[in-house]
Image (cartoon, rainbow, N blue to C red; front, side):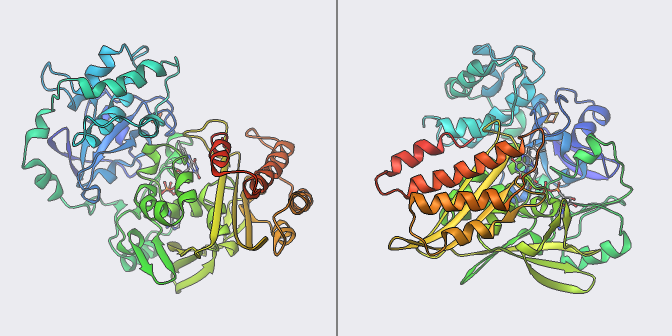
Amino acid sequence: MIEFFLNGRRQYVEAEPTTSVLALLRETLGHCGTKEGCASGDCGACTVAIADPDSSAAWRTANACITPAHQLQGCHLVTVEGLARGEALHPAQAAMVECHASQCGFCTPGIVMSLFALHESRRQTPAAPLAPQALEAALGGNLCRCTGYRPIRDAAHAMATQPDSRPAWADDPELETAWRALGRASRATHYHTPQHLAELMQLRREHPQAPLVAGATDLWLGVTQRLEQWPAVIDLSQVTELRRIEAEDKGWWIGAAVTYREWEPLLQTHYPAFAHLLERLGSAQIRHRATVGGNIANASPIGDTPPVLLALEARLRLAGPDGERELPLSAFFLDYRKTALRPGECIVAIWLPRPEDDAQLRVWKLSKRREDDISTLLGAFHWRQTGEQMHDVRVAFGGMAATPLRVHKVEAALEGQPATAETFADAKRALRAALTPLDDVRGSADYRLTAAANLLERWALILDPSRDDTQEVALDAYAH
Ligand SMILES: Cc1cc2nc3c(=O)[nH]c(=O)nc-3n(C[C@H](O)[C@H](O)[C@H](O)COP(=O)(O)OP(=O)(O)OC[C@H]3O[C@@H](n4cnc5c(N)ncnc54)[C@H](O)[C@@H]3O)c2cc1C
Ligand code: FES
Ligand code: FES
């Protein structure tokens, strides 16, 4: 049984552990306004908005196709059917009509939902100009195959000038209290939502085959693409020990089930280059739900956060049948999609050290599309500079081998050396000798080697004292 609110109305529904929000809406509840395009979180046609007790009533967009239906427990779900008040359209809908921004109509409900969440986030400051970055972040996860982006962008701007019509449920002062009172713990028999680590460990003993799910943005592709069915699922998204960020003098323990969106403010303050990368990790729909623990456990050679965390010498706290242990992240990735996790173990938290005052970090992701695309390769570069010499040099890449990895030979070529063209020429030679990259549909091995060497060149350019910061910003614009 799942209890939640849909467009202001209370729902009680039964669902299999592998039912998605999209299947629940279309097949059980008869709400067919939300469309299925790709069924893999890429196109955004299935975008819905969810408010949960952790989100302070802010609307978070999500891809319904890869969101487990059971994660709706105790939430308020809003779909495209819930926006108009009688004949009065919500500003997101009215602006789409006014700007002729719907052509095929199939992707339109998802675009309207992303615009709805954007509009609602700006209701307190409707007159403030809509920054291009905010617009791109809001719509980056919605593809329009007929390339009608211009009118869609116009609609985003035009929302501010539409009559401020509110859905009927928005005027119900008791609604939020009602959905918050439902509680998030699952009442289902086969979809488990442990609240504490001890409960999680117990459930793992009882259901050793049940997959762990956090944001589901990787795992659920098994359901939608490979048609897998699991008799039971263990959900990590409410385990207290995995959901918190603990600050210590020398750094932070980031809970493995903390989402990118929740983690971003800390990174913006302490590691802006890392925060900037998150803006390019998937889409808003993905970042609202996906977790860093899932990114690490998934062990993809092209996952975005592992190279950065390797360059920052992150550590992992793991918990399993034999208790807790710590492991440097560098010892976690053993081979292609093979990790050091023992049977029954999970990642509890990731240790992120505080940056030294003079530490520098740059992260450059190369992908075919700027928004909503997986890396072809990603380079993360950490260093400190004393006078002319570079110290604490750490170089990590994704997409350059079967696992994300530090490239110690490149580090050795730079450590203690002045940041000159000659030093970086040595580093590039070391890179070519050290790595045999992947050769796949995203990029040939040759492309990857050349591009990785070019990232070292770019690093050299930003350290060149004859260049100024504006040139680094200009270079950054081409980092995709
Ligand atoms: C459209 C789309 C775009 C994407 N873009 C990017 C991108 O740009 N860059 C990128 O790096 N990734 C991208 N991804 C992949 C995915 O979003 C990330 O890997 C994400 O961080 C996974 O987190 P999650 O919480 O959704 O993991 P889940 O899907 O819930 O889990 C992933 C795997 O990790 C395991 N797991 C999860 N948490 C733990 C834990 N605490 N301990 C042990 N095992 C655990 C699960 O059992 C599962 O095997 C994209 C995915 C989609 C669908
Ligand atoms: S159907 Fe394409 S993102 Fe869900
Ligand atoms: S309006 Fe649907 S693909 Fe462009």
